[in-house]
Amino acid sequence: MQMYQNLRYLLLPVIAIIGIEFIGIAICYWLYIQKLKPKGKTPPPVKQLALGAILIGYIVFVLELTMFGRGTSYYLQMDLRPLSGYMEAWHKHSLRDLQNGIFNILMFVPMGVLLPWIHPKFRTFKWLILVTLGATLSIETYQTLSGAGLFEMDDIINNTLGGIIGYQLHRLATSIIRDKRIRLRILLANLAIPFLMVMVLIAANIVYARQEFGNLAINAYAKWNMSGVRVTSALQPGAAPSVAPVYKRILHTDAIQPQLVQTLGLTVQDERKENGEREVLLTDEAGSQYSLCVTFDGNATLHENGAEPEPTFNRTDGRQPTLKQAQTIMSELGILPQKAEAEKGEGGEFHWSLPDTDRISQDYWTGEISLTLKQDGRLSSLSYGLRKHQYVRDVAILTPAEAYERIREGNFPLLKRNALLTHDQLVIHQGDRLDITRIELTHMYDTKGFYQPVYRIYGNFNGDANWFTLIQASK
Image (cartoon, rainbow, N blue to C red; front, side):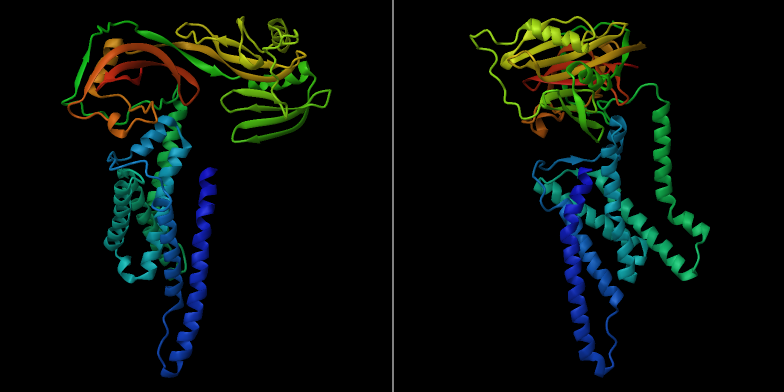
């Protein structure tokens, strides 16, 4: 949604420029005709002038997207892995990442359509490809030299592919206009690339749907070149464990709203849903308004609208809420699935925490609940972050020794764990030193909501003792 809003914003100056161009062309064309009409000269074709105006607007639009107004977060950085963006979209099962690749294709389709109509030279495929490739190479070179972006092989492939698709659409349109009908052979020939792309997406979705578990974003697309890199460890990783459990995340936020409504005597006034999240406006019997926000990942918050925080602790008049009052409300709500000790925090908050006790072959709950009480003991706010891990089955996993070998082979992802780290502090180079200090088995969620075993591997990278990476443990 944000992408489309940005496009609408960027299109405004483009539309204005094209409109001004058309007005200027109309005026100049009228004056040109009036001046040359007595001499019998042929005026320039209106179609060429109009297409030229559209081409200028299109170029401005592309420059807005690729050069103007971009930050300088990258310097002389390159990603020469072909199709890496699509592989990352697959591992993350991310529509957003896939949209970025598709948009880069669509961005250059107009070039393939317009150029052959503007000048007959570009009706030859090689000239169209040379211009398209030259344009995208210029953009990528500017981005890497200015720090406005990476020099990415994916962008070159996508932009060039977009130019080819545009060229084929031009040929198809020309054929239909010339023959006054659609020939099936020409239709299939000129729509072969989009058709193939759609078939690949369908096949990928079928494969993904047939998988028992989802994908993990940490799976590396390409290996690091570890030649000349010194990898050491004082550890002696053994052969155990051989199996680990997989769980399914179960969210119960749908049960929170009716429970709050019934227990606290709330009435629903309004409800809005957007991007998988829900916001509900409620009122109690005294007329106080509350907002309940439920996110797509199962977290929920309830707070009183317009209420000022009350300094309930540090009071000496005995009116501060008590732990017993908090436990009574929590018992009435019935949203704590198992016994947990309450802790009194700052600012009138009470916390219940269920630790992540995974690697057991049974269901368990994890997460936190916190609530804030008013001075009279009534609920002021509630934060719910519990989730159930439903045991699925045990799976065979790599041994710690095999995980260490993955590190030696360079088969691990780059993780930017600190925003202050530079690109050179993360990328593996010849002559670097990596000492593995700890290997532990943990879990992380995949794209289908399963909690899969992964190895978290700590090390000292060129003196940085906080280095770590993650490797999928299941075989």
